[in-house]
Image (cartoon, rainbow, N blue to C red; front, side):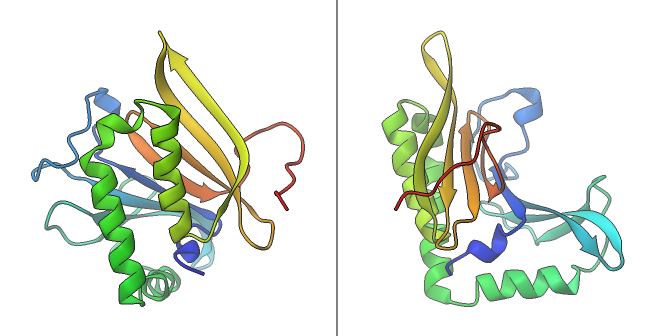
Length: 187
């Protein structure tokens, strides 16, 4: 199953939290807060909540749990804690994912240099989640410079997932990326 538990009905966002300021990413700068955000929307503790788990990648900070309004909510909800522990319990899986992620982030500015380089990165990431590319993609260019690249994926059950790379982040999650018609997984 790989790390698919982390994105089932959820989205992971990998960024440095400077996207609002529209500044370039400095993924390998040790004083930047590069994190993996995990957003989920479902009933938790008898109420609808949006939880964000900030897992620092390049900075020695503890994992933080916040609600949708960025207020610290204290303890990690037990269901999410169990989900994260189960996803990362295999040290080999965890190590390969972090190693690949660090490699990708070190050269992040070059990823959007071509559709081929983005495709290679997403192929590497998708393997950690047990996803296969559906061959559906969307791109956005500004003055012949790639700004945004999206792809749709399916798991072995035919569930649809998406991956997006922009100048400021990488997003991976479950759900429909393209609003038009049903997608059919490749055979």
